Structures are given as structure tokens and as C-alpha cells.
Image (cartoon, rainbow, N blue to C red):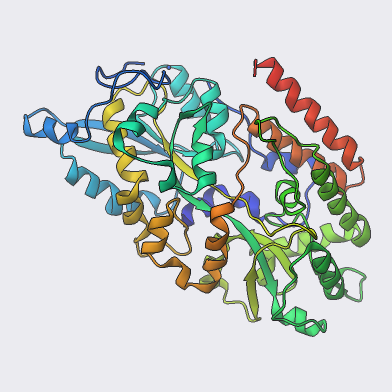
Length: 470
């Protein structure tokens, strides 16, 4: 998923802090909003007790009877070499296996700094959507709630695909109100990168990275250093750098974003502690000085950790790919993110999926493609491409078959996947994300108390849920 990281995770590489307007521009937006159906397929977005989908060999049978090939339109948002590579490694084998289905690949960019596409939403609303779309799993809840996606439950049940084929958290993202709206494809998660050279220079044991947030605070303080101009020449740790979102830190503090009944809990007491801890860093180390350091790092054009001037940072498995490009001249390592004392180290995962938009004209052929691409056969083909780098697939069995854990750095991330958190599947998921980014920015700039800010988030998301009838 190298192109995914370049095209859609640029916000992850933003540095220490940004003005409020810029921070909000990085956040996701809420989007969502129907078409002819095949006679053997279930009603799009309908009940799981609907018509039984056609058998898996329907496509082959059509070819042998001499019927003309059906062309399905597949929309994707990734640039670079993705189209060429995906066609060669996955689409061509699919078309060979199903000779009466042809796949037209269409690049459709996402909107602004979001992972969503207004063009896709407009096409669905206009009754002329593509047959398949590569889709951020995070958006499944909001788009399913709007009736924009086809309910795949009958297809999944008939195919023999099981939830256990995928990591638990990833499958949870595919389901909204007990119906399946996508098949997961690809994932990523977060861990801690640490600079062994800076640790050694600070008198710390470079082979013993911090295991708790309290240890991290102590070690980071010893690495902070200022130059003659009073500006930081190196920093120990900045909680909001790279993947250090409030979402991340709340989980590290033992917090939660929803309870066991699916009720959103942004103002959970541990979430409040996490936001207060982030604000304390901004106050202790001076937010303006940290911003100045951020600006200087931004001018390098690379991830700030690879400059050798950051002691600890929370980031994803994808930046392991930076090694080949930057070849850092310092010793470094990867370890699970430290948790607050009394809590276990955790991570959270994101990633992509394949959906059939509501109103797709070739629904059963689209399902054959989705099933091929996002289950074992297609997942394995894509994962074996030469430039796969440090990708993690959504299927544990495929990762095991590829022996990805033989890479010790990648193994850190793989070992965390079985218990990885995912963001709540809710119609207001994007609003909740935006709200956390908003109050994070306010807190670190000293413009609000953590408890009051998160109480406000709770009030806002509950009001939106009430407005849409959830």
C-alpha cells in the first residue's frame, strides 16, 4: 500500500502542530447518501433474508454459454504505479479466471484532505455509480447509514467467507447494524520508533525503550536540547507528532471511544487524562518553540524521525519503507507504544476495503470481483508483488503464509494486530474524528480545559446522532 501512504496519509506526516484551520483541514469529513439490480442478487442495501445470490461459478457458466462479456467499472483513489501494478498482479488473473467479466479501472480522486470522494457520492445519488470502489473502512458506518452502500450479507453467507478470515477489529469495521457492507483489504497500525543514538547520548540504555508513558516522559525530558538561539535542536517526544492523535493517546491511557453497547464515550475519564497530558507537554516545552521545531523539520521534506533529531515518535508500519530512501545514519528501533501505568500496550488499525455502491448495475459480477480481490486469492497476489514493502494484509493466514514476521521490525506491528482497536463504526464517525482534532488543537494551545472540551465533543456527537435518528 505504498501509494496509499503517499496519496492519502500525507496528513500523518504533518509535524508538531498546526493552526486550528489547518488542523481541521486534515480531518475526515462525513459524507454519504440508489439503481438496477440483477434478478439473482439480493436487493442492494436490503435484508439479509433477501434473494440468494448466484453461485460462485455463475460468471464462468455465462462464458461457456457464449454470452458477451460484462464490463464492471472499478473506481480507485490511488495514484502512482497502483493502476499498472494492480492490473498486472490482480485484475489480469481475475479476468483469466472469469473470462466473461472485464474490469475497467477508473481513477477518481478523493475530496480535499479527506478519504471520501464527492464524485462517488454524486454518482450514487444520481443512480449511475461504479460497480466496485476501493473505500476507506473508516467511512463504512456513515455511508451505510446514508444508504449509499450495498448490503453484502447474503453474498458473504453464500460464499463461505467467515469473520475469522480477517483480523477481529477489521471485520468489525465492515459491519454496520449487523449487516456486512465491505470486505476488508489491507491494514496498518501504530507503534513507537525510538532513536537509540540519542538515548545513548542522553545516558539512557538504548536497548531498553520505555514501556510506560511515565517512563517515556522521563526519558524524553533527558533528550530535549536547545541551541544557542534558544530553539530546540532536538526533542525527546511530542505527543501529537505524526500518528500521535488524541485517538491514539486516549487508547494508550486506557480510554475508550464507545462502550459495550455502542454508545459513544468521547469524554471517558481516561480520554480526559490523555488530552490533559498532551496539553501539559505543550505547556512544559512551550508550544511556540515546538511549532518552530516543527517548521524546521518540515523544510527537510522527510519524516521528522528520520532527521535524527527526535527521540521517540508514534507512527505506522508504512514508514519502514522510508529506510530504503533515507538510510538514516543513526541506530533506531521499534517497540509497542508505551501505555499508562496499569494498562497494556495497544495499537489501532486503519485501512481500506472493497464495496459495491448502492445501485451498481452489475452487482453479481461486482461481487465476484470483490470476493476475488479481497479474500485470500487476490490478497495473496497483491501481497506478493515486488514492491509490497512493509504492507500488512487484512488476513492473518496470508501474513503467516508470507512469513512477514521474519522481519523483526514488522513483527512488532503484526504481533499487535489481533487486539488492535479500530475507530467506532457510527454514522457520526467522521464528525467524531473532526471534533477530536479540533479540541486537541485547542488544548495544546491552552484554549480550553480537557474535561470541558471533551464534554463538548460528547454533546456535539450526541446531538448529531439525535438529528439523524440514531
